[in-house]
Image (cartoon, rainbow, N blue to C red):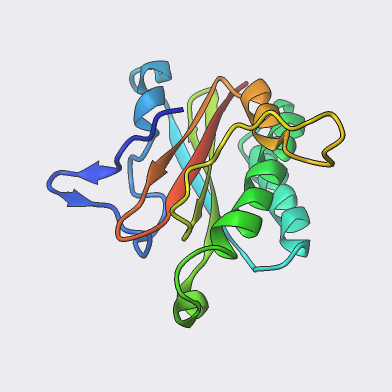
Length: 172
């Protein structure tokens, strides 16, 4: 998918700003929004460990339950697992120089607008996510195919001065 800049007037959103910025929705998915949709958001910071994936899934399911959107739980768990794994594996571990790692974080945000929920994961990596076609004998590489199949739309947006947000929109 094409990237879209996150802009606020003349100023770009930074990876160090609070995420998500008030009113944020992925630009390539704005056409999905109904006017006057109720809005809510929840954010969770992932520790740089494999156990964070389970915690992120639990956070997402709990948040959806609180929004009375439990029917999205199964799909959201898959999307969160794939995007969070990619962020920890590729975005955090291959992010900026090691001297900045203590300030780097991976955030999971769920942004609700009416019947739509966007899962957005921010990480300090600058590399674009790549939808790969792995060989039949590769043990992985299908994560973004799963995200694509579970979502109405997905993509990524760069953050300044470094980092990105990878997002997927699911519908109730």
